[in-house]
Image 1 (cartoon, rainbow, N blue to C red):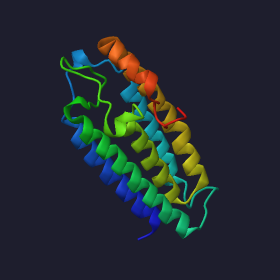
Image 2 (image 1 turned 180 degrees about the vertical axis):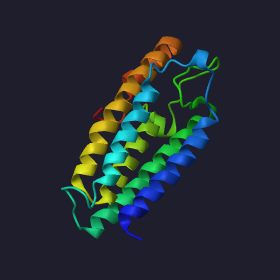
Image 3 (image 1 turned 90 degrees about the horizontal axis):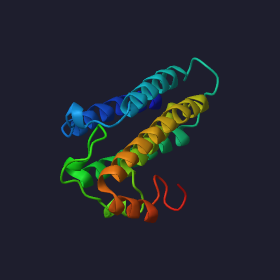
Length: 185
């Protein structure tokens, strides 16, 4: 089995398991405040991964560096671990749609101590790693150019909902943390 094929199999397995886990925490349609941010993520991922998976062997940008591709799989594993741990930390407060629950509270421990969206950071890291494992520079660019803005849109919607519902405690949390990368953004 080639590394790109292994990367695709791992991606599909992870996305399926991830959807099953977070799907358990979906809230009702009336509570959904995501303003199409989930749709943006789904469309961006569908387009990005269709192109990224097709490119190796069919277009320019291929590189034949097994060590780099293996490193991509390792990066993917790290991203999956970060996302999984972040989701586990929030438990039922993690939802596939933007919703603030009646007993919602600011979680500012563990991965959430320094960054507000470690599950999205984990997904972006995993996507980057998988794209590297595909062995095509253009695949990497396509995945990052399409998926990162979709997640940034989602973050904006989520933060507006949380600040609106949780008020000053969430705004204080925003003031002392970064969105995705500690010390940077």
